[in-house]
Image 1: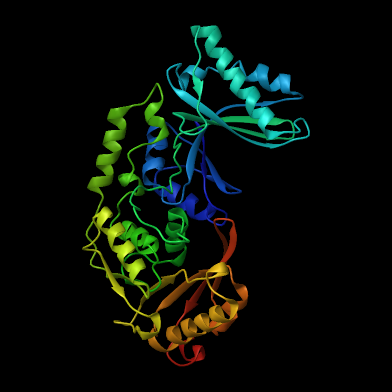
Image 2: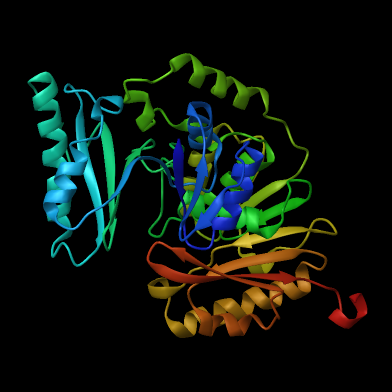
Length: 379
């Protein structure tokens, strides 16, 4: 099968590396996705194990069109019974960049009609469309005259892990959090601290990585489980692989927040994952914290954008820079923000910059190597 694993902008290479570890050969990174070949086993495994995939699509058909009639006729040639039966519901998600269609919705409607008419001709009855809670989701992508039809094997986006029961005003996407941890270079063998943990997404994703716990463990549904060819035994074996691969790390993962409400939310989310023995949570001001050992990693998502005034953000970022420099020598620190002006108040030179998106916000992920004294002494 030709498979497309979708991801966030900036995480394409990270997802590629994950897929190679999962057994994928020659993954091809494209914009916000990775294309690869795989069988049913790999399809299930990537859904269950990949930390930076948002969804996994299976390409159903690809063809050229000159009109809406071409789209309808070509869609009628697809064997839809492989992915759907008349008793299930479905929806179509169209993405159209083509002068053939003035309205994206019209292209989607033509595909819906083709699916319904195909079943009516074959079975005498048709599946119902349910845009809110469909059993099966088909993706229609049209670029100029090239149409690609895919079926979404995840349906519910993979960043919805299933463990987050509580969240604050600006929760971080779990895929983004896992991607940041992987981009940091942290391997689960040194101390880890998130001093502005919010609802705990970054430390939880770090703990899942350290313990080799698959991110799909907490979900109770994947789209492929409603396909006619769903192999329950195969998926059971993949879950057993995940259980067998988990470890108990000796590394210390800590998180904290100045907000009592955030600390309570984090504790409840950690309890849901069963990671209370791996992550410690405290209420504290980052300015009061000091390193407990000689090296480790700090990853934080400080307030930015509409959460603070500009002057307040400048003061906060100045405090972050001072605390990092004086209280955490030997550490590596990563910070994600959309506020590039306030970032200047950190007062440290980053060794890495990566553009990422937190929702619709364009952000910069920066990494600092923290030294005691001047950097020249350590070169």
